[in-house]
Amino acid sequence: VDTTAYMGVVGEGDAENRAIQKLMTENKLQLNEEEDLILPQIFIDGHFVGSAAEVQGLEDDGHLERMLLRLACVVCHARRSPAATECPACKAKFVDIMPGEFTIDNHLHALAQAYEEEESDDDDESDSENDDA
Image 1: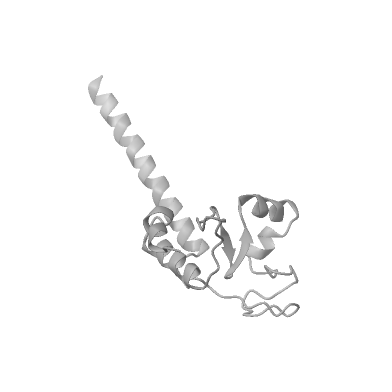
Image 2: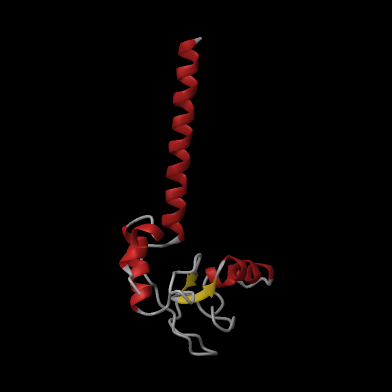
């Protein structure tokens, strides 16, 4: 599999591309029969949890939030501590693909920044329309 073929196409930035490269190196990414990358692929604590449909199923079954909060094992759904590095029930190892890169705080900050930029653009357009009147 040519891993470089996926790099600029799938990831939007350096961190995403490093994560994709790491997952490919560890043979964790899912490929179809033609060895093309299957998208989307969702990983939590280093474990493939599925595509969008499977993740929706986890949400429907009430597991997703507990997995994202690191209160449930992504493999067996057993109760776990957020600081745990291994599931007490099934012994699955929990790993960060890119430690410190893909955090909820980072994502919320990026969303807030995008919202502020959108608001600023809307204000600029409104000012421009008022100047034309």
